[in-house]
Amino acid sequence: MKNQLNILKLSDELESIVGPELYALKGGFHGGGSDGPMQATGILEDYSYYGDNLVLEKYLFTGADGQTTVVHKAVGVRDQFGQIIRDPITQEFIPPSDLNAISNCLGYALMDGEYIVLDINEDIIEEKFGYVRCDKSQASLVVIYNGSEVSHAGAYNPSTDTYDAKGGGSQYYIRTGMTLAEFYQPYNDDIDPNNNENYQPQNPNDIVYYKKVYY
Image (cartoon, rainbow, N blue to C red; front, side, top):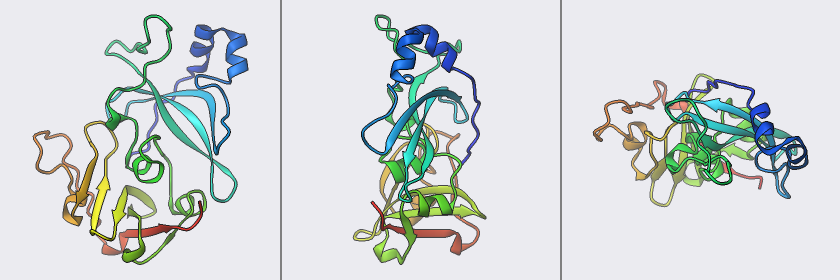
């Protein structure tokens, strides 16, 4: 999993669109905090590593340990000229229409495909998201490591011994009901030559199964 962000200070651009008073009142694009464990910050970043040219908003996620960590929500898209696509009437950002673009593998596995989760390690998976290592028969999450770095993740169903996952961008689309071999190479048989990732770890101990113990 690649965790590189092309960060731009887009908050000033957003403030100029909605006006300083509304911006301050609402706390950014999505309107400040929420009643749940997610809080929008209004801080926007460009993210184009996988070629989708997304505009992300930082959210603060309150984890199982009661502390916050940053996740990202895709709130807009830039066109081929670098301009943010907006509704012609309201001028609000138009989110990605392709659901495969709004999350990466960890966002799909950990947050129901609604967020992009970057810069994560095993401590965050355990302390923030409430998972512990377990036997495969008890697992709901599977993570492949490359040393201490997460290289891929997905959901696991022990009753059918199958895997659901996606990769980093829209070309790495959601696949469900996969065998382990398909989980390692989910796009090996499609017609796109640019998404033939091989996630199989060199060390069999680098594929780790987890169960959720904190909600």
